[in-house]
Image (cartoon, rainbow, N blue to C red):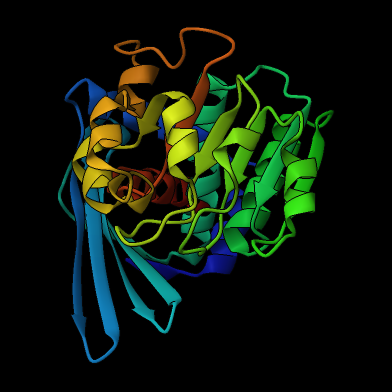
Length: 286
């Protein structure tokens, strides 16, 4: 069994079919052919340890991601096992896997619920996830105008960025909403990926009110963790139409009913994503 670094992962995933692996994992989950563990967090002395994992027999892998959070800094590790023999296969320094899988899942949801050819894309965030989303969306839609903003952008710059934007990604650590939901164009798709804690949010109540559907990776975990949803008034939360991404991809649910629908994809990160992409990376490394 070998350990692989982020550099190893970046080298093999740069041109890998990540979307295909993730799509297969989510469909398998929706059809009961895969399973996952919700995130568990343990905290002491300012050090937080988090774990989450998944089992995907049709991809031949099971595993868990374990990571620490210290003063807002994350360090990730994935342990991967064979579902055929149960034997450990490899461990991964998983900062790179987390980067690749998050942007790829947003792109899958955007393709399912967004415009096939967006005219303009607005990305909030200039950190690792902001950059990875900008890269993924630029490759998917090279003709779209790309607008990238820091989370501290001025109101004027925000209004300009959202004007005519068909696809929006929020990838910041902002604890409070980034923009007024009335600024979002009809028919827009929003991938909100920056917050996975119940006390922080990037989206306001207004954009939730205007949305026709909220797609999530896994209701069991998202509805415990997503401050974007949990911090909204109870009456509003009860009205939201929340569906699992796997159900959309498997044809068990629809992403939108009308071209004017505003569709939100609320991502918190789930175990099958890490396991699927780690399995893909291992295939390409060996």
